[in-house]
Length: 90
Image (tube, rainbow, N blue to C red; front, side, top):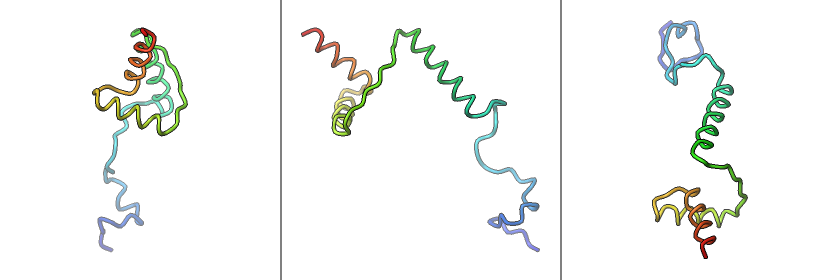
């Protein structure tokens, strides 16, 4: 029987073949890695003096925010902060 490159039904022929994809570099599960990364991100934000705020906005409002942020070359979070601080100065 010939070995066809696209044939994956005969797994024994491909047991020693390396599959493409991201190599496993951590002994932790993906869920544990995500938890640790999120904890580290929150720590970095706290050191920088940032607080987490959650908003629920309509899609139209988000689209406007994205357009304004793109024009100014900043992200949405920075734009909201600028708008709030400018409004507070008035």
